[in-house]
View (spheres, helix red, strand yellow):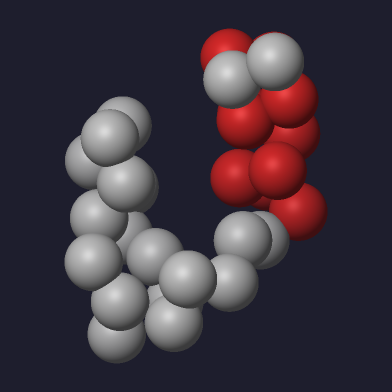
Length: 29
């Protein structure tokens, strides 16, 4: 497994899941 992002969600080898991408689009951008 990879590390945790700044939000504290577990990352799988740094691969973003569709749900995470949606969160990043709303929060990150």
